[in-house]
Length: 157
Image (cartoon, rainbow, N blue to C red; front, side, top):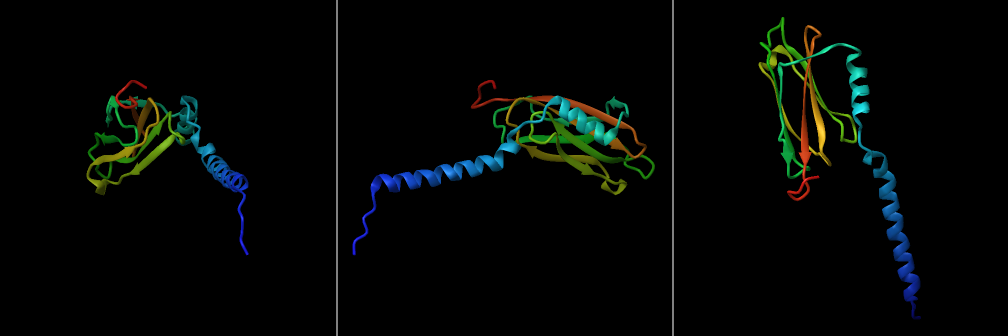
């Protein structure tokens, strides 16, 4: 017995399976593909901090002004604090207005940390603002922001 496969039908089935796979992937990724806006970042910050005033200073955010590779953008955060039992950094929150989620990362510290400093790498798909907010043991908030311009292949983007 010989099985004959009709080439156009086989190609159509293969194509249908490929399209189904692409559709499934799109359905999974589509909700994550939307990017947070400045308003969404502000709303997320309001959820965490209410209407507390944020002062400038104490927080140093070291990010490149221009990132040639948005897949691995280094970010370094340092907060000026004595890190004593009476005065220390409780946490540092990082937000970005072009990421799928407005809040990127949160670091928690104790006086035993010795220093309120952290480093990581972020993935940035486009030029966006990165905001760091330090929450002190006294309840005071300090923030800073920096814009990172993401270029595509060394060209402006």
